[in-house]
Image 1: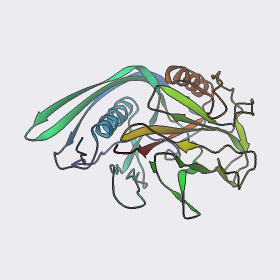
Image 2 (image 1 turned 120 degrees about the horizontal axis):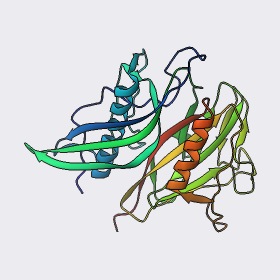
Image 3 (image 1 turned 90 degrees about the vertical axis):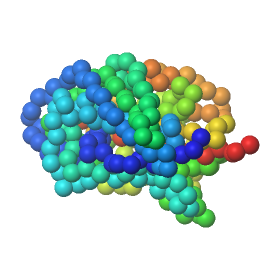
Image 4 (image 1 turned 135 degrees about the horizontal axis):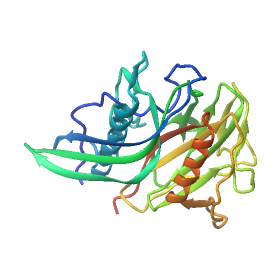
Length: 296
């Protein structure tokens, strides 16, 4: 379909990590939340229909968090513009001078999307229901990126070609444990890290040290991963789970030797919610990756 580009940018967003400064002694409140948001794109804008739906859902979640927990002014702004090596595509920019004081723990039921047209524009109305937790203390601020290899140099990117290898670079200010998952477009969630042979459920990292995962030149025991799709374009979500505290491994399905272990999106969401509820220090960071297939 013809791509679209948003006409406007959001004034609220979901805080992933590191923008709230508050006393760690305060109790965290958990609540059932609901939110609704109308997102408008024009006929000439450069964003796909699926991306516009995802954007509308994200903004509806942000609205739900803001309504329940409020916002706090921050000097930072979040720029979610997609970077492309050849500058051939773009996604959206999410600028904000305030951040919500809550984090989305999981959906209570599937988001609902309606699409209408008005004056040549498409209006995406998203409604969401979920469980959220108030942020009352600063989370660990991870520095991390999805990366690709361009002429022998690894660069941060969220745009990949079908069959292209990718890596994850991560640095934490404190010691802790990390796991990496990929939510694919076919209802599966792949467990990328820890590697298949590691049954501990997490990888220990040292504070202040930079790690590059999925690269055998850095770690001979690493597993190589490639992003693939049989569609013209597909979006997958990369999820990094970090905590200074050990966390339990999910129960996943052992795949064949060519694929990572995996579990369903529903089971992954249940596992993640259970761990987040038990561990107030856990950080869950997400990025959308776009995989471009062939036009054949």
